Length: 308
Image 1 (cartoon, helix red, strand yellow):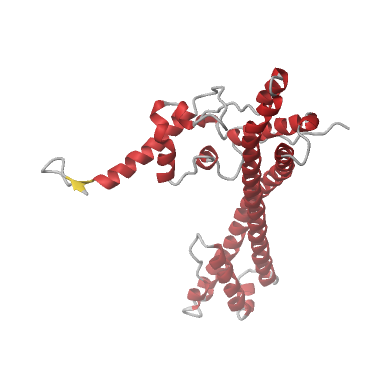
Image 2 (cartoon, rainbow, N blue to C red):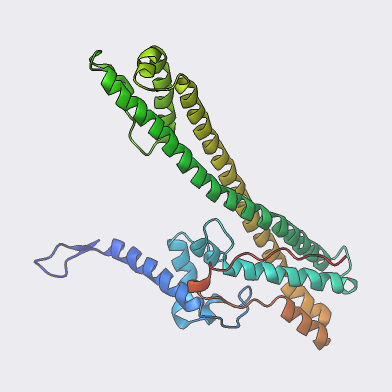
């Protein structure tokens, strides 16, 4: 539906305006929820208690395509654990230690014992995948640099051959068209063009050598091509490792947090009048809120080292 505000101005699409308002509301809702370092239990406190404005936040998140249960993770993080995820991880570690220490109070095959086992499995998976993610991310960054260096080396070699081909074309008009550099931005096309250079240069090897290229120039070019191709493969493997670890981390967090929500219902009932046990539980599963401005600037903690 379009509404005209002023006869001299184009009409405004009310539906588009509503979507824009909803999207802006999501941003405001996130900022309202994530007040800096407030001590709020984020996994159980209803979202509407954070601010009167965000009572409709789940609908706004849904309209913006964001999962309200994992909104902080999806909104702030891409490829590495953010500060909120680290807080979740640390909470799961504490809950796992609580479950081990209080195992007699929650014997198998009860639901609590199963939930604590799920938390323990999640912590183990997080320890492994955090290291895998850090390794993959480091290798990906290193691979990006190596790939750029190898790309420049190959392009420089092709540029030298192209320049020589223009000189040879003085006696063989039209030859320069066979040795044109490809446009930048497509590594596969660069490799294909380089292999074409090799094939064409083989037939004119004597001419290139006569213009100052070493006798090994074709072998050298093949070496540059192979080196660049290897960096592409290595970079792809590192990226896949990094992405796979990130997915595994998200899955482990989801499983662990779901188990904690179940334990939130069971542990207080088992504790009964045992105020000490209940206080220990509340301390173990407490998570401090973080502000969005610092949500992703904290490195992931090293997995805990078990005492010998």
